[in-house]
Image (cartoon, rainbow, N blue to C red; front, side):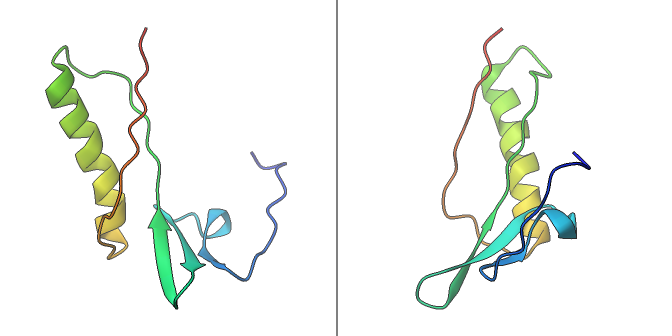
Length: 79
């Protein structure tokens, strides 16, 4: 990862160089968006409870930045 070149952009307020929990970037109408991504292997056999744990962990990154969640994208790994 240290070899990946990170390009500075005016619309990205916090990103990879900031090493924060989420990226903050400008969107139209003078607003900002906060985006994060997490990935977990199944911790337990109950799919609902595992999804809840994963969602709360990802939401915690947004809450730590003072953001209000608007959308979610769930990716499931089946093994």
